[in-house]
Image 1 (cartoon, rainbow, N blue to C red):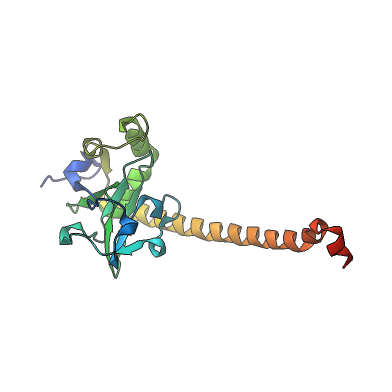
Image 2: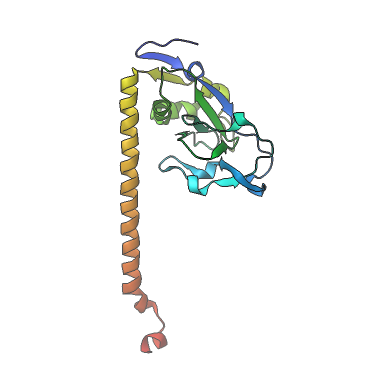
Amino acid sequence: MKRFDAYDLGLLADLASISAGYPFRGKIDALPKGDVAVIQMRNADPETGIDWEGLARIELPRESAKAFLRPGDIILSTRGGRNFPYCIEERDEQVVCSPHFFVIRVRTDAILPQFLAWQMMQKPAQDYFAAGATGSYILNLKREVVENLPIAIPPLPQQQHIADLDLAVRGERAILTQLIDNRAAEMTAIAQQLLAPAFQRPEQRAS
């Protein structure tokens, strides 16, 4: 295994294994109900993360322990120009992802998965993915492009500090989004109460 010094640079393939998600054939939603959660493209959003409650729970056609995601795994969306990373948290259920994701599993203690996911979300990495994506109709990110992503490797305390800041920012964003949604719902209720009588038919108003 390659060794890394402070402030070293490397390629993603030097730091992690990269594999495709579970090789489903056909529609996932058509599979029998089960206890394995499946992350699909529709369940992942760069602002809010993974919608865990919205995941389909199915019975895998061919169960394989290697397919299950582990805490610290990073899944990277590969299609449609939405090449966003998501770091998997501890779950009390078995989880797989669709083949429209790469599964990136760190195999060195030189870099934290949370920091790696943060770095892959930043503009230099996103510009790199956009430049390397291919396809005339639906853009697709090939594995060799992901493997050659340049990665900065600062000291672990700095990585942890950045990961903690990122977690705080996402938490603050979620709170602000909820406040905005609550205010919008309040304004909608006010509008309904105030303006609805004006849009009633004359006979309804007369009654």
